[in-house]
Length: 260
Ligand SMILES: Nc1ncnc2c1ncn2[C@@H]1O[C@H](COP(=O)(O)OP(=O)(O)OP(=O)(O)O)[C@@H](O)[C@H]1O
Ligand SMILES: [Mg+2]
Image 1 (tube, helix red, strand yellow):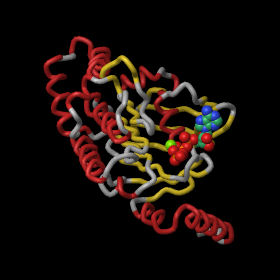
Image 2 (cartoon, protein in one colour; image 1 turned 180 degrees about the vertical axis):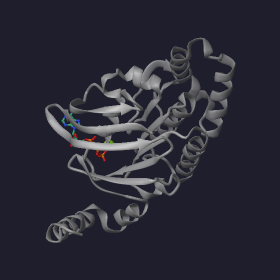
Image 3 (tube, rainbow, N blue to C red; image 1 turned 120 degrees about the vertical axis):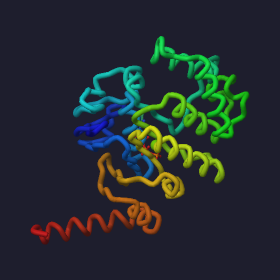
Image 4 (cartoon, rainbow, N blue to C red; image 1 turned 30 degrees about the vertical axis):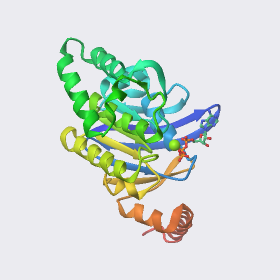
């Protein structure tokens, strides 16, 4: 069963079309990497799935299991278990990390929310992510360094336990040790919770830790090539330009030999 189905969506921002007739289906437990040159629509994709109101869904639909996700508010999507670790996490001044997470969970779980378990898990998670304990009581991302913000996104993932995890350039800003640790944390989470994962990244270094089942390259708002991990190696070796030339040569070859 597909937990996420992106069905022929066209997405625009400020009247500019970014994704065109874009489709992708993802099953629970699958890890999909989205790669592509700057400005091709990778963040647009994860933000429209999350429901960012800045983006306009011109046509097409997005489904979570059999429910129409694209008709729901961001809040409802989050309650269902959709999570986005943002490329540039925003500051929320005046709301502490602990209050932010507790409020989110109280609202979602109601009577089932257990304060003691929450505190224990938050404490353990902060330790596992090698974050400074005082960060729990600081305003969300206020004055956090680039790497600390990325760790804070993973802290949210661990606490909220989403079913669809989207991580937009989670590797940017992390030092090599933190990158390894975050990679291992995501894999550990995946092993227990079996979420669908969408990883947006530019680099193999993240995918060495979190091995994707599928790799997709976006160009001009569409998936132009899908493959397995070997596609990442091709990108590292040839760059997108080399790959683009080869993809278009392949297309010409197919046109010339339509029966193959
Ligand atoms: N508010 C806006 N007004 C106009 N264009 C915008 C706006 N927001 C985003 N865009 C454009 O949409 C395109 C896609 O942006 P997006 O953030 O999805 O790219 P990306 O693939 O994530 O790139 P990167 O790898 O650099 O993060 C870019 O050309 C960007 O400039
Ligand atoms: Mg981006």
